[in-house]
Every structure is written in C-alpha cells, then in structure tokens.
Image (cartoon, rainbow, N blue to C red):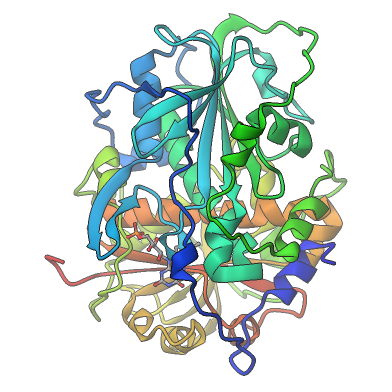
Length: 503
Ligand SMILES: Cc1cc2nc3c(=O)[nH]c(=O)nc-3n(C[C@H](O)[C@H](O)[C@H](O)COP(=O)(O)O)c2cc1C
C-alpha cells in the first residue's frame, strides 16, 4: 500500500498505452452540496459590499500589516462569499448546475469549509459548516471550540483566533471520476480554495495564519467527519483582539452519527484504498526539517543565465479583485495572438509574491515545489522552457523550443492548449519532498501548486486573459519533454493566453 508521496504520484500516472476505461455512473453521481438534516441554517447577510481593491495590491501586499481588529457577522459573510460562492448556472437535463468562484477538476467540488467563531457580534460562538448553496451556516458545536493549535510554531498564540477556517475534501466527489488519481485533485482543489480564502482575509485587512500541520484525527473528530470519506487538509486562523490564554484544551467529544453521515455523498460509494492510504501516510508532521530544498535546483534542469523580471509599475487590470473572483471561469478558446510582455511579467510578478513571506503566507511550503513555464507566443520571451526563481524574482531559460503543441498532445490531446501563449508548470522532486517532510510533504507541494493556480486564474481574469488548469497529462511523457530527472515530476499545468473576445 502507498507509503510515500512519490510512490502515490507514480502509481497514479497516466500512460497513453495503458489507460483503463472507466465509465461514469451517472445514477450514482455524488452530491455537490453537503447537507445536515435537522439543523436549521443561520442565514448569512447577503447585501454586503465587496471591497474595491486591486488584485495586484492584494497579491503583493503583506498580510497582517493593519492593526488587529474585531470581525463582524457581515465581515464573515463577505469572507465566505469572496472565498467560495456560486457564480454561474448551467441548465442540464438533470436540473441546474452551478459553477463556483474556485476552479475544480471536473467541476466536482470536493472541498467544504467549516469555521469556528469566537466573539463575532450577532453570532453565537461555535463551530459551523458553511453551506455554499444557501450562503448559510449550520451549527455543529456550540460555545468555546477547542481549536487545535499549530503543532510547530504558533503564530496564533499572540491573540486568540477570532475565526478558524477548516478546509476539507470529500474523497468520493472526485474519486467518482478520477478514481485513485483523485487525491491529486483533492489537494490541488484545496490549494485553489486556500488562495481565495487568503486573498479575502487580506482584502478585509485581517491577520491570517495558514497551517497545513495539525493533528489529523483530532481535527477530523472536531469537525464531525467520517474520516474514511472526508478529511481536513488545511486550517487557517484569523487573529482577534483578545489576548491569548493558554487554557487547558477540553477533550473533543464525538459528534452524533447523523453529523458524520453527512460526509456520505452518494448511495453507493466506491472506496479507493490508495487515496486513503496516501492521506494516512501523511499523518505525521516533521516540524523542523534540518535543511529545506531549493526546488528549482533539484529537478535536474540547468540554467546558464538568470535575468531579473521587470514588471510594469501597474498591471493592466480591467477588473478589480472582487470582480475577478466573481468572473473567474476556465477558458479554453485561446487565440494565436501574442501575450504582451507587460502581462507576462505581471503574471510572473504575482507568482513571486508572498512565496518567501512570513509564516502564514507560503513560508515553508514553497520549497516543496517550484514554478517554470513554456513560453509560446509571448512578446519579449524566446519560445522555450524557463524556470522562475521566486526568491530573486528572476527567470532563466533551460532550453529553447516550441513546446506548447507537444505539451498539448501530452495533456491527453487537449489540442486547444497549443494556442495558449504560455503554459505555467508546477513541478517538484517528490522523492526529495518525502525525504525532507515525510509523506505529508506531498500535501504541501500539491496545495501550493493549487494556490498558485488559483492566483493565475484571478490575475488572468483581472487582465482580460483566458486561463485553464490542467491536471490530466501523461506523466512520464511530460517529464521527458521537460527533461526532468527520474525523481521529478510535473504536478500541475496552468495555461494562460489571449482568448476570443465576447465568449
Ligand atoms: C486541479 C484542476 C485540474 C483541471 N484539469 C483540467 C483539464 O485537464 N482539462 C480541462 O479542460 N479543464 C481542467 N480543469 C478546469 C475545470 O474543468 C474547471 O475548473 C471546472 O470545470 C469548473 O469550471 P470553471 O473553472 O469555469 O468554474 C481543471 C481544474 C482544476 C482546478
């Protein structure tokens, strides 16, 4: 059974000559909205104005620089709306289908949000599940919630968290289509959601601290999850104004069976042991690894010359941050028109932001993966494979060539990808990640890739460009095209470029 991230990644590779057929059981399609029968929802205020802020200033600004402040019920509503909301409707024969503010592989939406509140006006303290369908909260526990502290350093120790968000994934939602490979999407999708949450908290000038390191069984019990079906993947504390008291943490009691049963989303759920095995393999947290890799040097790729990125003073944003969140969609109608140098350097600028920021930004997770790109039709960049060094905001060419068409072929022959101006590549050496962080490191690498993917989607939307994440590719063919060493792999690809207007 899978014990390491690298083994899991290898075991779930796609191979052009060995693809097993899989039909989708539409009768047993997983529900995309979690329900708690018998719990009366608390409706969140609807008409709260979104902040009119530029996406560039949020991405590049440091979180937690404003004075600590109280958080209102309206603020909480807005945070959740900006993080995870229904943004578009499609009519299907089986009924209406809703798209969301975050991208999700196959639009299967495995992610759920829970929030523990402590001192929000007009809302009882407690632990709630957030219902995206009704923009409401379901109370699961009342009163002071024993919020688990971060296991290593504890930034939230300065003050008591006023809010603690928990992001989970329901296995079967993505496994219904992607089977054993689905854990990749649980992690990437959760990364997308983390980025949206972080930007919302920054937009409201709050003090967030992200933790991917917590006691899995304890947190899952707190949330009342059936751990064989749904697991917490990320926790985000928001500091309040009350001084931190190191209280004796009360024992976490089991929630009723009816609450746990809500993790079931289909009549007949197929269990994919490989998914549970890789998740369970990551239960241990390696708190202080002795040395951390600089991933761009661990892929077997070499760069002769690094050049600093010179982004324009202002990005050419036509939509503000909130508009970008609500208008974000996957676009595949790329046209063969060049991406301007200004847009390209702005995208690179955004990808570098926060990567070496204080704890709670990307901190210890960024070393687990790194970013590169295939420049195709991009003004001022010779076509080729490049690496991005986020610590020095510089790029270096690994080798020249027109690779985007070959990469489109590798991405399960999604031919439209060849028209995208640039393919951003999130890559890692998962073998090394296993050695440094144990199997939990795979979570860091994949969730960080997802975060940066969501950031690209929002930046592209704000600049009037198209964007689409790609998790489906023949893994070894991708490694070979990129020239990665035998321990390294492509984790995720995000295509960006100009698209047909008016669609
Ligand atoms: C992790 C991930 C992998 C994805 N992989 C693909 C892919 O291989 N091909 C594709 O066309 N779209 C892919 N997408 C885009 C999703 O299909 C899209 O986000 C989903 O249908 C929801 O639509 P929206 O992004 O327009 O809201 C991916 C998205 C994510 C987040």
